[in-house]
Structures are given as C-alpha cells and as structure tokens.
Amino acid sequence: MSDILRAATAWELQSMLHPYIERQQPVEIAGSGSKSKIGRPMQTAATISTSSMHGIWMYEPTELVMSAHGGTPLAQIEAELASNNQMLAFEPIDLGPTSGGRRGTLTIGSVFACNSSGSRRIMVGAARDHLLGLEAVSGGAELFRAGGRVMKNVTGYDLCRTLAGSWGTLAVLTEVTFKVLPAPEKTATLIYLGLPDDIGNELLCAAMRLPYEVSGTVHLPKNVAARLETAVLAEQGQSVTALRIENFEKSVDYRTNALRNALKVYGDPIILGSTNSLEFWNELRRLSVMPYSEDTCLWRISTAPVMGPKVVAAIQRHMAAEVFYDWSGGLIWVEVPASADAGASDIRRAVAVNGGYATLIRADSSVRAAVEVFQPQVPLAERLMRGLKQTFDPYRLLNPGRMYANL
Image (cartoon, rainbow, N blue to C red):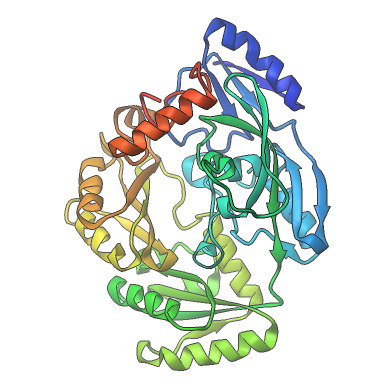
C-alpha cells in the first residue's frame, strides 16, 4: 500500500511533489478518495490528498460567487449556501456509494475535477460551466492560476474547462471559484406511472420542447423504480417518469398545470410537493437506485436523448441490463451482470451504432485494467490530449493511466 500524504497548502503540495519528480515516481491525486475505484487501476508510489486543504475563503451572496480550497467538503459548501437560500445549480452527483466508496464525502475540488453534474444539467449546464477560476499545481510542481470571478470570453484553451473533467491527470486543484444561484422557492414534480421506456423517453423530450422551464427529466423502468427509497413512489410498483418544475410558488403552480394539460395524452400525473420532490431528486443525486454490488458492473452512457431507448435495446439484445434514464434519455446509467469485460464489446458497439460515449463506472480492478474505462478517443482528440498531458504533466506523474493506458 502506498503512502498517503496530506497537503494543507499549495506550497506544501509543491514540496511534496518534488521528490517524486526527481525519482520519476508516479503519484495518485485524491480528495477524500470516494472515487478511487473509478478509472483504470494505477501503480503509484504515494497518494497525495487535498483533504486537509479546506475552507471557504470568499463568499459574496449578493454577487453569487464563492471561492474555496480544493479539499473543502461539498457538504460544508452546500450548508453555507443553504443558509443564504442559495445552491450549486448543477447539483453534483455522488458517485462514491455506487462505486464502492463512501457516501457524502465529496470535496469541491473533486466535483470540478470529475465534472460531476446531476439532473439539472439539462437546464443550467455542467459543473465546468459554473467554474469561474482556479488555482492549481501542475505535474511539474508549478503553481498557476486561471480565470477569475466573472464569466468572460477567451481565445485558445479555456484552462478551467480543460481541467474540469480531467480526473486529476493534468493538475491538482488547490482552489476553485464558482458561481452559485438562488435556491427555488418551490419545487413540484409531475410523476407519470407505467410508461414503457420509449413512451417515457418521448414524454421527456416533449416536455423539454415546451416553454415551461423543466429542470429535471428522468425515467426509471419498473425494476429500478422499485429500488426507490421515496415510499410514495416505490410502493406504486410501476415505472416512474418524472418532470421537475422549480421557481416562485405562483410560477410553479401555473407551469405545473400548463404542463399537465399540454401532456394529458400521456395520462394524469401524480404531483409531488416540495418535500417529496426534494427527497426524490436528492436520492437520484446519490444514485441510490444503482447500489454497489460486486455481482454487477455499472456504465454511464451519454447519447442523443431520442437515441436513449435504442441504445438500451441494442444492449439488452446481448445481456440483461437494468437502466435509469436522465437528461431526457441523453444520460443512461446501465447496470449489467459482472463478466470478464463488463459487457464492454457489446456496449461500445451499441454506442458506436447509435452515437454517444460510454464510461465504465463500476467493475472489478482486473476488468478495469483489461478494458477501456473511458470512451476511446478519435486520433485528433488523442493528439490534443497528449499535448495537454505533456504541457501540464511533462513527467507523467499525476494519476498516470487512470483515464487511458498510455496517458
């Protein structure tokens, strides 16, 4: 087992990296370690954690902006925002429990490093779209800053967007500055029961074409809906297709009725009030309907919303699969039986035919070492990634091979 080093400041992190640079020894970069079982297995000399690098050092509620050290717990960030009726609008998803890690231990640095985005992404964008600025340490132990406190146009590489989603393979995020938004006064969720996958997906896409600002669209087939902890839905024994409406109370009431009338061909929905709605959507943020199991593997597939059911049908022709559709079918969580390749060949074929990207989220380490965990890159994208790796991590020390075997 490699040593675990905890840096409390950026300069301390730099000093920790220098000996490994001199010895050309790779290191694992982690926050709390909740997602350590995602990605290809790595052989490293040590783990450098940012969990001691915590604290909110700037928060201006009237300006809707906050800055925090990379190891600050997400729970602390959200508690501080809630005290001012504000939120992280992209509602970061917690991959820890479903991949065998700990629940509720996300750090804000890891949220942006992994670009963790939940159901509201269809309306407000991904985590990277809310990242305004950052401070980071490169694989050459160099401290650098990018961005600022406001959104601005850039030429060339936008470093904030480049590092968001790089999974610690390019640099270590020591500070992040991000925008926040007011929390909605009221939330309502329209629940349609018993719809098959293709009709449920059709309903979700139809809702997004209407001018009612739907902020969440998910479909859970019957078997997956039965795993819900929200009792009012789990006890229905049917598939669940959900549409979320948020805003001021009068606006929510108006848009809920308008949406129900516009979609009456799909049936009469159950309406969840704010309390049950928050319980339901928070449950989806934890991916509790896809619980950890050594007997199954979990894939995250991104595709065009209208292609979601087709991708799933193509996969289910070759193996049993339980699924959960988010983003109107544009994001699919697919749980398949454990096997030597986690079903990679059939899943990637289904994605190649119908379009999209597939990422293996949960599998045994031997499987993750044998197959491509992240979507294989086309030659041009791979050349760009190699160039970025050479620039930010010239000695290839940071999380080597976590995303791709040769990077």
